[in-house]
Length: 601
Ligand code: ASP
Image: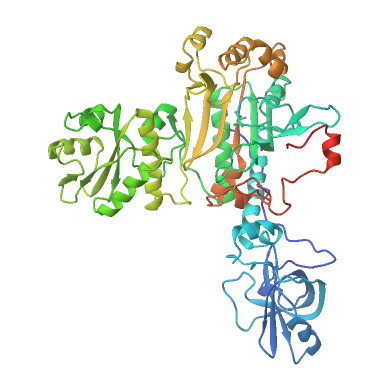
């Protein structure tokens, strides 16, 4: 039982491979107990070693590697044939399982080999453009171009298996909690809110376009109106954003929605889901899920997705640093600091490097003040001229600093300084190895602001999305002071990544209209773009809420990887290209014509 749900027994138990016409066993399953058995295996040539009298071939499939042995004296013709086998040839072999003379304890099948009596070459192979080993010699681009070969490598095979197991564990949990898997359309209409849409021209309705969904958001809400009170879908979503290093234009979400629930119901259900996944896939019991409000997360960690695997929290030193002699701090809206334990010995060069690092345009700090709190209790700083030792002492007490630590101080506008220190905190932790990929610290971030004001565009934006319910605010507050309204939204954060986000939704037509209006949509625009939803809310929409997990990110965290690319079978590169099929690509003149489109000049 997890959170009151009966979880079906795991589906992940090992079932022996059932034989086919091509094989009796896989290349990963034969052991000493099989010695004497006649077997047939099929697979790819991993390696071929000719030792004169004996030739050994390693045969690989996705289950493992089995050694084949050929004895020149006993079977000269067969051995001659074996000697010529190239890497990645596809073979079918029959023979007897035999105990090996020199065993290989590093391999699960390392106690046995197959003494081959029959060999069929099922297909030849050209020499692959890179080595198909755990560590390949091929560069990124080359491996992307030949992704079907890269996918033969054990590391990618493990990651795709982990992805499959994760999807199974998700389905197990949600099915047993009575969620229904329902598909929603991929060809929908474009809406300007949120990221940019991928659009698809319609041939039959000239001049009109579908859009690919950024998420099934409105459809899952409509399913709640229809009475399917627990929905999920492991679903592809599409966002045409400028690609940052680890973004994919198409990605997968575990998309969920529930009716007749409040925030605590959703939180309990999906905490249970994450626990179940970690248990099934990694055998790990997750620790307690902490909770932080958005404001607290920003104040203490300078991020709305804090990594809690290490401390180094941000502390406010503003009142302690006011000093006319030092105008930088005197005039700053806020002065904030982090403390790095064990770092009092950092060299001048290291400090200069980090100072340059925070001054880069991406971070944008004006400068950085440091205080060294030495192991012997003495304090030394880059602002010794302006602050006495007893003042520095007060700073270090405010940070609860221990001897042998380093305090780094930034100043400026509060929100900027928080974000800068948040980024610095992560970079230093990376350098110090404080972010191990086998430690997991989940937390919920709650009480987000409902709206953010964009100075450039002079209007409010929904921080989550426009369907999110305000938290306890009435109409008046919504209209008069939108900046103060909190959203009934929640993010699930794991090790510094937002792995899921969701909210309790608006189910009242008038509130939804008010929110659209606040976001700058006229009544006509709202009707045109979201009329179907506003109409649905006329016919008994139940209270509802939901969440979506970033499935690729979740898999990459489970696999202990930084990038989501390696848990996706056929990913795109950083420019959004599929290098293997060479997409996007041009279309021919006939297609332009049929679609009633003209190529850009
Ligand atoms: N549809 C939202 C998203 O894709 C998630 C949710 O609110 O359920 O971010």
